[in-house]
View 1: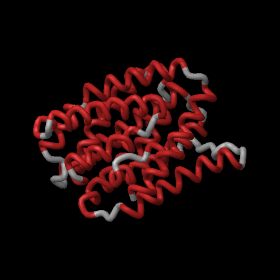
View 2 (view 1 turned 180 degrees about the horizontal axis):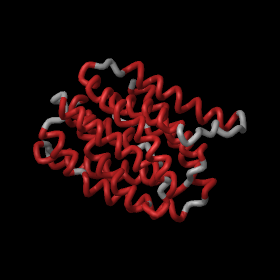
View 3 (view 1 turned 30 degrees about the vertical axis):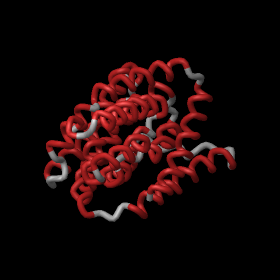
View 4 (view 1 turned 90 degrees about the vertical axis):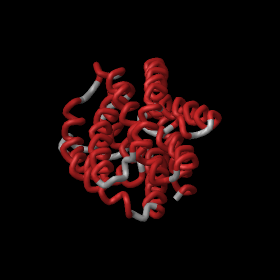
Length: 245
């Protein structure tokens, strides 16, 4: 728990969690890429991902609330249909999975998506509503293994036509379901310790504060600027995934 680390480490964790939650509330992702390396340094990999999942559960819940009037419940519903069983499967596999190659692959994918949008001047293919069940299955399985795959989902939600609060809130609701299933699996496989749960909960108020700050930024940002920020964040996260992998 945060109380078991030094005051300096606890302060750094709180500050990074605030920045991560604000970034996630503006772009729909990126928070995990910011927060996870600090959690790994403080607690080790096996505790870091469950801690991150608990903190993200709170952060996503707050983003759903702040954007509740703009949610696309149909998208979230189809996503959840595929997400729950595959998040459970990925959560149970997490304890023994080799993750390095998968992390690098995600980094390549993120950079490739941005390149496609910029160089081809073509929109990412628009998924069907029912297609979000398959998206939820694949993204949730990977999320259980590497912590978060928000950048993987972002171009698909944007291609469907969700922007600003509709995108942020709907993506957060879909991810909330994934994180709930992951935590169930982590607990069942003894990966989720009491220390990890308490630490994630301790970061919760900071995550909510960051979500509120991000919501205010999104409400004031023009749509074209909003998409550019997401693409820039995807590129940075992709490079970080390549390096971290």
